[in-house]
Length: 131
Image (cartoon, rainbow, N blue to C red; front, side, top):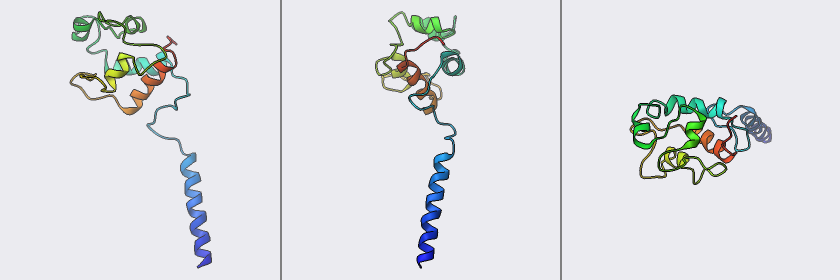
């Protein structure tokens, strides 16, 4: 009986160590990890937002928000800015993609993944730099 208890103890311990060593596939970078506009944020905007928020598309016609470039994102809408560098809690970009408003973006399309939302949140909290 004692041998079995040791085996179970070491087996559980080994599984725990192995689980901690494996990378988290599909997880966003930890909050302290550096997020860049060019490598992390812009690809999300291109794949999920630019279809409606480009020149001549409905998102630009309605709000004035053009997401084809960093400059367009930071210019915001005709109603005001969508990014408050350093504060994702009040940035309308984050509020809308996280579903914390009466409407959610992307409008009438599949929601952003938790990983994409985390990337946008981390980038804004890190100062929303054009890097």
